[in-house]
Length: 351
Image (cartoon, rainbow, N blue to C red; front, side):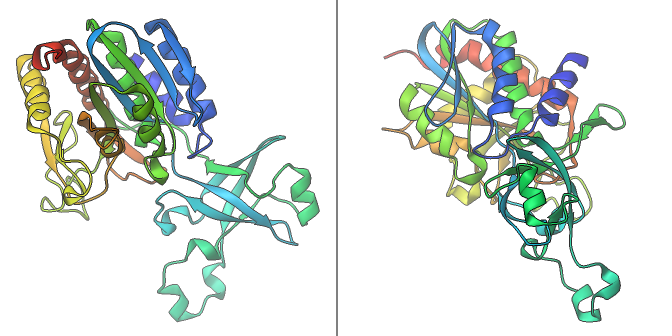
């Protein structure tokens, strides 16, 4: 379990907002290069590792990007105004420390807003909008901040690092979806499959499932497994009717998400994953959700359609800098993917 925790820590601590995933992709390449025959980066930035073998060909997709921010402009007093890249709840951003990834190197900043001491009573009752926040990097003027290398388009990520909690639980930023990258890497290490495997670190999932669409189109896999995190209903503020999933209960196999507007996995794919889990005594949970969707949706709709499954980790507080998951769930999910790769040819005979 130490190795899987160490891998998650390295990936979680790396910085790579949507469209700027390069430093994360470099770490993934180091991990998968010994496990595949060739590694390449496609024109959109997807990292693709190919392990050559027999039919069926199987794509494992894990998105490399994290939600973040991007500098919009620097005002005359040296404060950086920004836009959100991906789905933030604005209050999560307030008073966070951030890193601005300028061409001259990383610059630390803090997200500020009007202090409560000078707010009117009615203002204190309202959430602060991200458009009213700003980033303070210590500069005194627009020119001074631009001299630091901060210009419009500078990517910005949260300055937060991985930490253990009690038991097998850990916290950090960007478990969505660095946890999925861990599953992909670990499954590659563990599988004995003789099938052709495409391991893809996709880009720009958080802003439209973009990398999964283009990489699946180019690779034309027979089957695919997407990896991601999902929401458990086991903490205050959420009820079982919102999510019946729990941390510590094993990998999550998605039947349908986004109330069917996203993925509806075909029955033969669900049977493949469930029967594999039961054959190898891996605990699992089935999920039907009304929330968001994942790379699996883009892959499923590629070309004439791809049979795709989604395996996720139940993760608390996603889209925040303090996400929490169970390392045991991570380990069991990687094992399920590895064994599914092993059994794919038995379930899906080459035509």
